[in-house]
Image 1 (cartoon, rainbow, N blue to C red):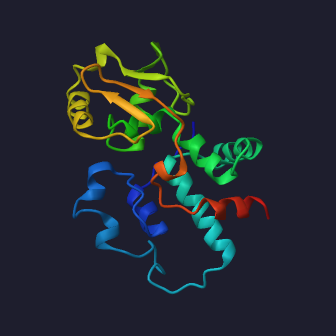
Image 2: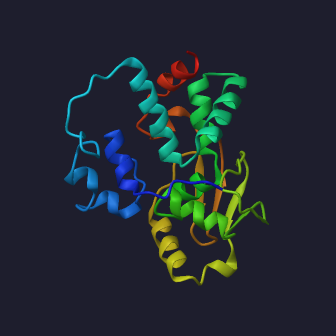
Length: 208
């Protein structure tokens, strides 16, 4: 499957905001956006006229990069959000939040969504007792996400478990550090999704 393999810090600099794609590095003085707060490339420091269309594109690209989805995947998510009752933009973010890799990240069992995606693909998690290795798997209310017993002896995963025990998950999730198990207690509301985007601009973009 195709995926972005270039420098992730470059994406944050292009969008002008921290997308937290590198985990701990994003919180350290080594963050590329803090050191070079301008777009990458030869003309990154230059002033550019920002049109309404450009703003809409940037918001769409920002969400894609935060959640690590490809263009076709993103269009499919938007089409599904449009068919659901309610506000399309909020439906879109809710679908992206319900991805299994994002839930693993939100529970604190990965330092970044890319690390969560890798852990899911390697089969370290069970959903309702069954192994799921598809990062885009959509969790539902009542689902339980458990770290496999066989995986808990891996040093990196032990480190992540210790960090998850100290982290407070969002209100729509609960986490039991003793069992290394998370549970989806509700679907996320917009005020519980802390991504720095204006989703109405994405809706306007696809409504052109």
